[in-house]
Picture 1 (cartoon, rainbow, N blue to C red):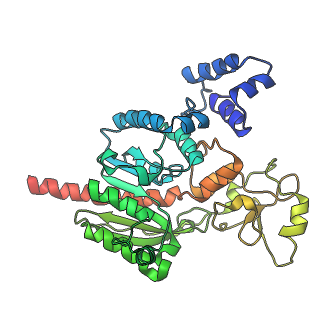
Picture 2 (spheres, rainbow, N blue to C red):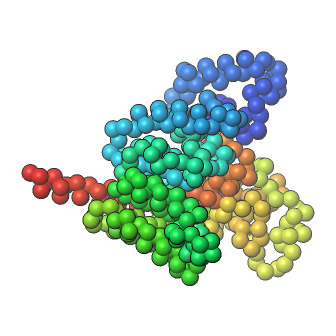
Picture 3 (cartoon, rainbow, N blue to C red):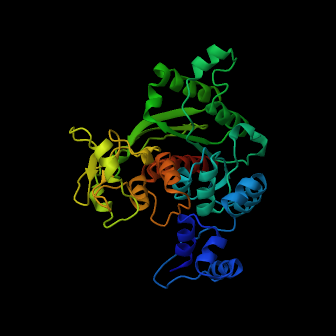
Length: 393
């Protein structure tokens, strides 16, 4: 067992270092020395290239000293990323799905914000940086200069709020207003936003109208589209809204969906324990009606699954997809299966409870889709840079 497996096993079982030490009848200090030794020595089997896992701070540390740790870790990160091709900020960061996609085109994150403490810990465990918290309390002057602003903000009816509350600004009191504060102050070259597909028709289309209008007032040219993960070789029906806005006059097009399909059965694990749905719940709720619900899958299932939602752990018979496996014959999707349908690599660390894992995955982006958009942003910026260089010469 390597370092990652030991640390994750302890966290998966929700054990402190003291509790883990008690089980093995050793002192807490001995256990800490075991973990520290393997981390310091970067121990790993020769055949395994280990992903770095950050374990210096616990959830309690982050909760107690959040501002201090956010400042400390950001300072280190900004130094590491000061010479990256693009500098970007990660707002409403969640567990860093958009971040991972922007890193794939040579981007370096210099600022992140996420209010949920559980997501903050997952973010820290994978990237070594503690996101700042409530965006409404962030001063735009404290945000570093950046090329690309990224975020997936909550959807709210701007125009109705403005009329009802008497606000002068149509976005006042919404999370998009907080994005605009930073955009207006920092003027990044690119704004990249993601949201649910319902944003297009939200509040009878007025929500999207306000978003585009306010960005255009700040000098941005906006591009929008809907893209479905199932068309990008990901076995999940997940349709999402994407917006890319450029401050310069830049030629940009969203990626054409390659219409590559994949089968969920190829990602299903076998002989899983611990994710089972009780027989009582199956009889009294899941199969109380003979209507073909819920959807059941196994390793032979072709095609894709329904959209993974943040409330998946609540076992909803009409919208949930469950696996024919486990101690009771029916179980929930596992951590690895969720990672597969969201495009996260297998070595992505999820150091939180199962409930929080489902929430975090259900609220995240599909990395494959965002990565393809990121490639097009890179192409557009590189093409613009090339034209500028030609004019100078």
